[in-house]
Image (cartoon, rainbow, N blue to C red):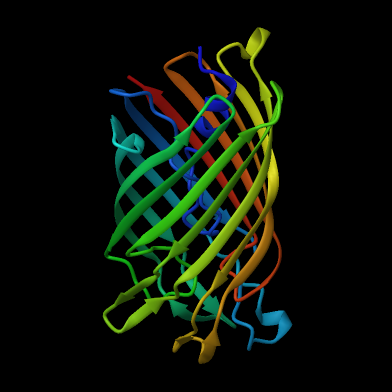
Length: 282
């Protein structure tokens, strides 16, 4: 059975492509393989700031379906739980219109990703790790206002603490380089999340379950222009909350659900995000 501390970080298997709430690498036991299937649905309102309020009611719709595979190589010197992870995601972003005029057509494509991660501290009641990831979009219209967030290079740190047998806390700080492609770009950004966890490891939840809730912040570090909407100085920032539930159905199978809600911000791509992840450990 997974120990309570491992359960906390075991939940962090999902990683939002839209909101820059970024979860750290999930826990895989040494020599173990983890396979994941994830569906992410982006919904809500969006719109450039220069539009009239009545015109900012763009209803974006982005669907992302991702397959992932990870392996834990064990320890080397001070690096523990050295993990490599490959992902392949198919995305669809809806047509964007304004006053009946098509600004951007529907876009379908793929995002390939690689992630390396390791824990520098992994004790019974605390953990601290680092991770680096790279993503490459295929057939993505980078100029489109509403699209998945892609980072050519991403660097992150994650930490977790177990206060007692029932409660813990997780922090993730992530820098994403954004994307420059064909003269178009997505801005680099910095995101921070601070989540509390209620850990369940008895009875029906004997294999591990938890609820996590807390705030997140995501802010661009530079500006860009959008020729389609005639907008300059686009610099996104979002403040919101994350609510997630995770249940280890068995020692080898788990389910994660997450809801992300934006409360405040500017130039945002959407106001809410739903994430469903099924994971299998071999």
